[in-house]
Length: 417
Image (cartoon, rainbow, N blue to C red; front, side):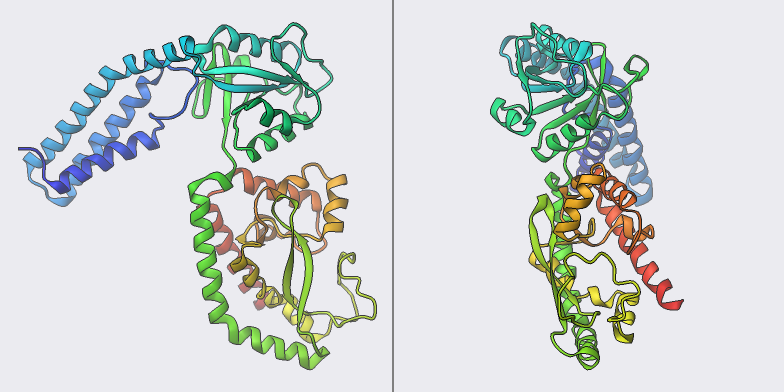
């Protein structure tokens, strides 16, 4: 008889979990059974160890543990026996049936041309080049049977139906390559990068091969991952609950504002959100109203005589930010993300600081990575942009949790000063 239902579930979870974590089943260019064999063997060994450990910890019968081990080993044998044939059929389909993903190469010169020719000569890697764009001073090589892209990369990707973008930077700070990577992410394209000193680049996690060229897989846009929808659902629920729980606190603060400087107690201001869209942000008013409203163009209120004792307390404690929970519930903002800025300053900073505009790839947030590193108020805009773009490139649910914990710690420390 086979293992019981519980043992079957444990075995299935162990096999699936180790193979997913080990990236045994993943999208790849190079379909090679021998290249993948060490990864598959490692996953099998881990699954074998997991079912053995689970059996020992649960005090399972020795026969049940042995059956789970047998299932793992049988699965490994059958799987490895079939994988060479599966890979061979995949290569055949790419070569004969042209089941290839349409690709655009960004980066001209000799290397860009060689990448295009390699894809054309070796369709078994699953890429069909349809366009090439220059990224630096080197022109697009002549004689390539693909479209030369000048100017609008976004429009070209859509028009050519490209699902993959390969980046071949001309130098270490090729701004056009970075812009192209962000554009590809926004469009949901698979993004591959030919690294500098690629001749010395070893194989490793996230590295694939196009013949002799190593290509590094860049992670997709965070907003396209299933975990992003988990983030949105959790943040909406938390913000709604916080609004209910903190309603008395907001009411007391509003009464204090009214007593100090009259009505209105709420402050409304236009801010820039995801993809450059604008929304109305809500705060408790901490500055007395002036005859001329300069809130959209005034950078800082440090030293402003219009900020009274109540306003200073609200700003120091960040209690003036609590109404933004409503923006989170509405979907204008997230709990965690780059802080939103006013349109006039977004325009100004985007013209001066590299990739400031790129921080708007995700919704803005109530707190962010830059803020927990001390970048609040009149601090470096360049540093803020770098932290915000780092957050987007490395986003995970755990990173959000860390930022929330650091924010709470910072607020508590600030109140004790």
